[in-house]
Structures are given as structure tokens and as C-alpha cells.
Image 1 (spheres, rainbow, N blue to C red):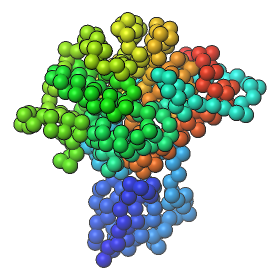
Image 2: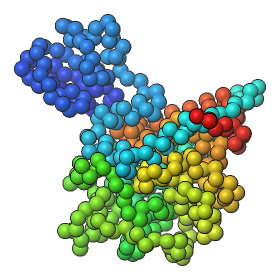
Image 3: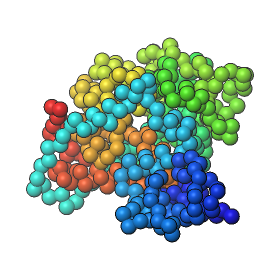
Image 4: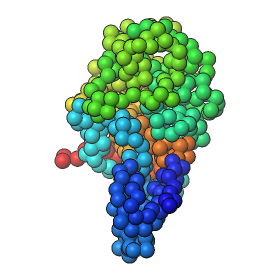
Length: 424
């Protein structure tokens, strides 16, 4: 007889297993192995925890068997890696080609040092800021990431409720597994922008713009760095496709005439328009009054063009390292873009944010707000809405502490004087 319990998404524990000799045991990585004697697995945090004959931890390993405490974002990353399927984990984790840019997004922060000021009376601190004139609780929002239902059954609905509860900005992805209507209904008081691609059939883009306008989304985030999809090797090896029970809900029923076409990331291949150009910014402005934010700018030349074309914001982004490999880390691009813009539009940034220190460095270099992508997915994989709230709360707490230790009492006091670039 076997008594088992699963690794429930709502619990940080791995699983309890009671097995008898001759039966296979599924470990947290889903690999079968033979157990030679009766064992009881108790809240294993890692595979390979040593057990004594009674099935309990040895003295040396006692601490490993305790329930895991989620202290930082990398704890959520490890949890998600253990609990998501391989193809799902590979999809979220993927960078383009050799993942050089993806990895440099993280490493670049380690080349930046802080110059703290002392004796500044930091007994009271305030992380509040504004984006496009709307107050948010701290300068971290959720970047547009696709297919949240792969990580948690409620998907984008849970993400929307979490950002509403924390009072920050959620950029909803075109490639959501919940529709824009469902997301708005789940968090009616949430502050949301909508991320937009332009398709060969412009009517598709125009229809969804009309829908988000009517639903109260507050801005359009025009993603401009995907004329073609980057080469993500593991997605190709895994032949990644959405499972049959999921779909890109924003386009439900819209591609019926292309039902036999080859699918790429939930829609027929070759639907994105590689001919997009600056004239399309004018087209968008002609059909909507929503503020337009350009996402995917990495150079001062394009930042200047964005300002000249009348956009209201820029997101410095390399798509999480998923498009052009070998491009610069976003934090390295930020100063020249901020210097070029000179306050004429707001500048935001995504890519590589993992700690409150990272947020502080980006704000000091001129970002009005930063956005996180993969960490939100890890939070979903952990506990859905609660997990995303946990991720945001940890970042806010870490930012508040980093501000205080640097001598900053509010976001307005964070400036470039805090920054020292390492020579390493």
C-alpha cells in the first residue's frame, strides 16, 4: 500500500510520501527511483536529503527538513523551477541564442555600487511615486508576460488582483491566457496598461485597442522589438505549444480561417508585422487618445525619435534577453536614454530586477518605475495571487531598507549621486 500527497501549488512544502519496498518514488523533479525499504518523506526541501532508518532526518540534515521560508526572489525562482513542467520552465526562462543578454541583465547590476549618505534621519520613509500622473505605492510594476495560466490556474486574474491589492501598475500582455475583459472584471479598481503588438491585419490591433479603451486601461505599451521572434533554443527543442485547454484569449475565435496554419506561441505563425516603423506611431495616435509608451528602446537615437514622435513614455527593454542576443543590458542603456530625453517623457525600465537594491540603482539612474517579468511568474507558481503579492512586498520592503541605508527618505531623494560604477 502507498500513501502519497502531492506538491500542492498552494504550499511551499514538497510532498509526503510513504512507500513500501518495490514501489517507485516520484521525487520533486518527477524522476522515478526505487526505494529499498519503508520510508516516510517529510517536507523535503531538496532531493537527496539523507534519512535514517526511521525515515526522519539525520542530525546533520535536520534543518533541511523544515518548511522553507521565502526570503528573497531567488527562493521563488527555485520553487518554480522544481514545480513547473520542464517545457513551461524552459519557456519562461528562455533567452535568445546563447542567453548572453539575458544573463547580463542580471550581472550588470553587480557592476554598480552605491554611495550611501549618513546622518539623514530616515526614521520615516516613503516609497510612493507616480506614473503618468497616477500614484502607485512604489516604483515597481508587472511587465507584460504571456501565458500566466501555465504557472497558476487563475493566471492573469491572480496577477491583476495582486497588483490591485498592492496598488501598482500591471501591464497586461496581448498574449494573455485570460481576456482583457476577464482581467478588468477580476480587479475593477486596478491600474492597468495594455501591451500591444501590431499585426499584418491592422484590424486585429484596432479591435483590441477599442476593447481596452472601453474597459478603462490607462495606456498602450507598443512593443517594437519583435519584428520577428528571437531564436529560443529550448522552445524549439521542446516543440513548445500551449496545452489544449489554454489559448490566447484576446484572439478567441479570430483566427478560425487560419485553423490549419502552423502555430507559434498560441497564434498562427507570421501574424506579427515585420514592416512596423515610426509611421505606425502616428497611426496609433490617429485611432486612440490613450497615452502611448514605446517598449524596446535601447539607444539614445531611438529615444530622441520617440520623443519627436510624441509618445508619452519609453520602456528601456531588451525583452528579457529573448530577442537579440549580444545586445546590452538594460540598466547599462538607461543613463544615455535618460540624458537624451531630459525629462520630456517618462522613462521606465525592465530586465534583471531581483532585489530592492536593483530597484534603487535603476531609480537613481533615472528610471521613473521598473517592471518585473519572470519574478511575477515565480510568485504565481508558488501561491497564485498571494505569491505575486509576496514578490511585490519583498521588493517594496527591500527597497525601503536600501533607501534608508543609503540616506533617502523618499523616492524624490534618489538620484545619480548615489551611484558609483565599478571598474571591475
